[in-house]
Length: 197
Image 1 (cartoon, rainbow, N blue to C red):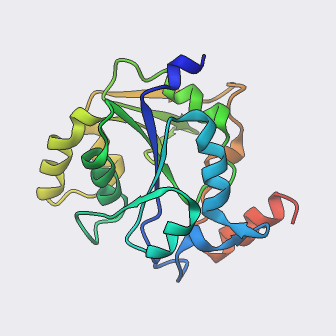
Image 2: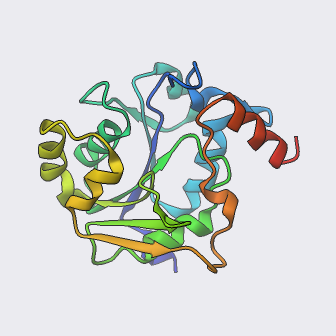
C-alpha cells in the first residue's frame, strides 16, 4: 500500500484572510492548536511531503515549506495554480486548511483512485469537492489559460479536464464530517461542538 502514495506531495491551501471569517482560518485555535496543525497531521501519512500555499509568513512555523500564490486575489484557483507550478511530481493532493475532520484514510483512498485521470475528486451528497483531491501537473497550462479567461470558480474550472468523480456514499473511508469546512464563525463554532469541545 505504501508504494502507491510515493511520488505525490500534499499542498494545503491557506490563502489568507477570509472575508467571511474575518481572519486567517488556518491559524484559528481548534482544540488548543492552530487549525492547520491538525490538517498537517492528517495529510502527512498519506503523502510524501507537505507544503503550505500562503502569502502569510506566520505559516513558516509549522515545519513545512511555504510557497506563495503567484496569481493573487482569485481565491483557491490561485492556490492550485501555485501548487501545480511548484511541484516536480506528476500529481499533487490539494486540501483546504479549513477542513478539520479530514482523515489519512480518506486522502489515501482518493490518491489510490487517481492513476489515469487529470483530476480526481470525491463526490459528496451530489457535489464535487475540488479542495480535497488529486490534480495532475499536466493541468498547469490549461489551468492558467482558464484563469486568464477570467474563470476562477473551481466547480466550473475542473469540468475543463479529464475529471474522475469518486462517489463517497456507503464508503467506509469517508463519513459525513470529512468534508465539513469552516467558512465562517458559525460553522467554526459548530465544528468545535461537533468534535466535543
